[in-house]
Length: 292
Image (tube, rainbow, N blue to C red):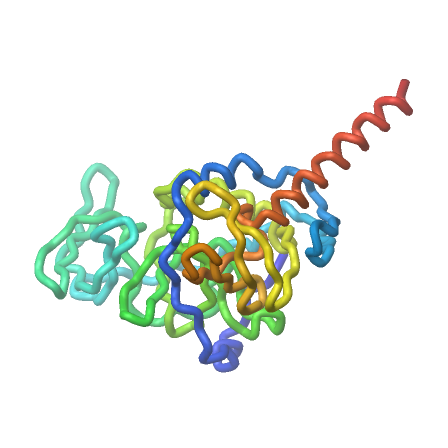
């Protein structure tokens, strides 16, 4: 199990951050990706020029810290959900308890009020690092000061240059520094249940079940590969490699995206998974032959 980073690590977090890119993947892209979900517990492949990667899988995730939740009080500044991917600043106007349920009336800075549950409000201040374990429910702030919900997928380490990686609910992966993160006040018992898109929710369940060694493929700058877009695998060029992410440019329309290196949108990941499954099935057949 991974220990949450200590508070003093926050002073070493790099100032560099990746702004969430518009998610170019269509719902069909996500559906196609889901059909190739990783089932094998180990991976080792060298597919179509991709550097082989061997990673042990683990069903262990970083447990949420056993810490008392921060108190929510009237007039406290918060960020509250107005739309699934849009949270806005406001204040707690009233705390309402009815039939054993606690709800919060939020007065938004941009006018208007809304009655929301605890998993749809976030603290307006920067969180302590110890609360940000793998799988934590958070918001991230983009360059245009918009807040979007997501799940912590990596905590600061030397490998990722002391940054957090968060998967936004629209499936966009992004590296962020501590000042750009806000902690959801009262997340659901399973924070993934709050993700509206079922395909991304299933992806996150699988990612967390394989953490800390989810399978990935390796790439180099200038490499020509293929990635899913508009329902088909299309030619792309790798422009930049940043820890667990690659930035690619699609040749057809020259738009750019950041994609997670373990994404099933990447053709080499699909081929690697198929190779893993074939080897797994061969091993089962061989085991059956030996037993007979």
